[in-house]
Image: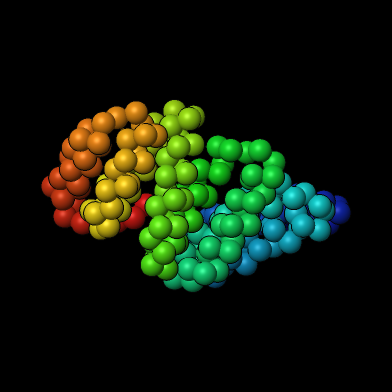
Length: 188
């Protein structure tokens, strides 16, 4: 990074700050991660690179969520989502919708959580992203177990093209698997 700074490559520093933020986040050094993501964001804003601001906003949302700052997380995820939508990056919207669902659930806004989780599922089905569909399935099964919201089963049924009973059985299997393997189910 010092080379970028020395030779006037300030824009190149944004990527380095972002990577430093990722490393700090992995190390669970959340305040350091936040500072680095914010630096990356500030540089991208300074250079008018609006689309590239979406990732730092998303990551700032993740850091805030880890720190239990759910309203701050929601605001950052919402910023990221607006940019992804503006630039037509539908696939990137999915993980942000999923995280907005987590945050809404933490804030006790279950209808909003459900809507966001379902929006993410719809996009992952559309893109046939098997890995993300698995995560979504586990999360939706857990959410159903918590809420017992039958309309969730109907919505998943519509999105996945399965019967209500097939979705119910699938959710039960997922929850049994989690109970057998971990004894506890965490939100993803």
